[in-house]
Image (cartoon, rainbow, N blue to C red; front, side):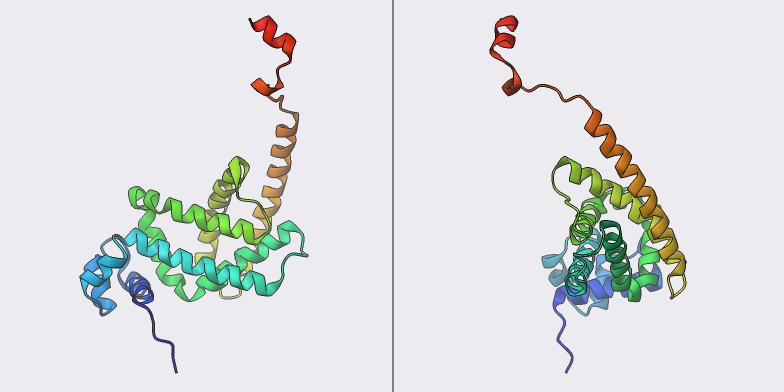
Length: 213
């Protein structure tokens, strides 16, 4: 017996179905509620915008990828291989929604305001992908990694949208980008290690304090 879907699942599924047929830009919340066979009031109690619906979808994919990554047991692989596997797991989780996601992405590229509103959700997802690969996403260094990952993801996503089922082009592009990213990160780490550190008040000696007085 099939599991009964929650209202949240019905809304997200309805939004993706309609996006695949009609695109995202002109899709209304009323359209989504009707497709989900829910009242508009029921939808409004859960989501106040289409952006929130997309964020809920991203969280669904995050959960699936994190579960699969745990089951795969990636901790013994090199970092680059772990990140490769995590990204491919994300594509696997998104595969059935590919046509809808392609249309949504295309429409968002024409609507920078909507794309900007979705950015916090995208960055959150990228942080989880890094963590699943054993890469720290916290602090200012983590923030740089997360933003770099978001740019990286956007480029690979375009390849995936036009790739075949075997995902050969996606894997080739992903491997190439990861190698380039590895080189960039190594150079950045080298630069930061050579950069002189600014002294904090706690670093000052008694003589320094006297001189300043």
